Picture 1 (cartoon, protein in one colour):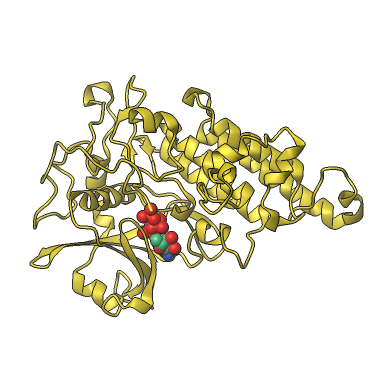
Picture 2: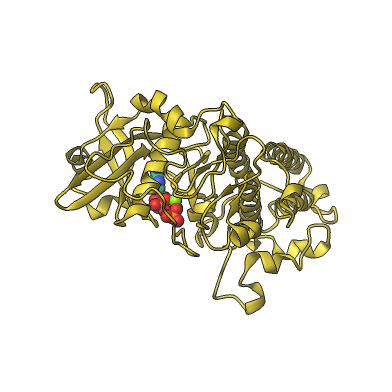
Length: 388
Ligand SMILES: Nc1ncnc2c1ncn2[C@@H]1O[C@H](COP(=O)(O)OP(=O)(O)OP(=O)(O)O)[C@@H](O)[C@H]1O
Ligand SMILES: [Mg+2]
């Protein structure tokens, strides 16, 4: 669940986006749309367009659903079709008619806002506008939305492509099955490509701000797609290095300088990526209260087991058994450490992270082929473990 620390949002534009006519049109909205914080940029610094401006051009790609459509799609939001619950609201599996009305019904995920108030609306609007603009194989596809304000309060819903394998979190911390090492790396590689696109591949820089394993959704082939753009922000333009925000996010994931100052940068996402790298290495959550005190906070615990030491093997997810290469895991540990540099400027860019992870996947691939060819000789090599 997000927003576990300092949840208040200062808001200069109250009611701007609310009311019965609150469909996400973009024309007159402020630049910091979807986020109340002041964006320390101005058009005079850059000619690049803002997300609301870009959204205006693309909004016709999104379908607008009525509440009736989505009730039909979910059998009246039937409990048996509920597939998840987060800070925003409940998620249901549903079926809708295809856009042209022909062919088989489409299976979708429908997220229904169940928190009243401005923050929920802002997150919904940010999600519609960001996902209405972006397009990448590693970002979840938003198909449409519903916005209805009636006697029974505001109704805000989002309709996404359905991701049959749920989230990375669901697999990583699952007690009954183990996500193979190579699949973990491939998922992180895809997620890194999604983040690199947000940071570097668009006309505007987008800071995602909510990278975590529950927001990495998995398709039928375990290809990852980032979801939840409710906290996303446009990055700084011109000479600016950061945007100022009220601190929101998920406890255990946010970068220290962001928590201390509210200054949000592209590098804040890189830190968070490093946290999730440690989750895939250790198979542990960022905070686990049922552990001994010294092990409860993931980042503090792993400090005692640096990747360049032999002790590093002691923190590797025991469920992997010997099915990984120690040297490849060390490289991923080193990458995580670089993402978690205290000085944000020393962290790698996401495209550098992508390159490192490509190498790690390749190393694991080579290790796997080698292991198949000569399992005996590999297993006798000191410090080398087979990957799968
Ligand atoms: N498009 C989707 N396809 C399939 N399942 C989904 C989809 N979107 C969300 N889910 C499921 O619903 C769960 C809840 O998602 P949601 O984003 O609301 O909450 P969260 O990510 O767990 O927490 P937070 O509110 O902090 O982001 C996800 O973990 C996932 O299992
Ligand atoms: Mg989520």
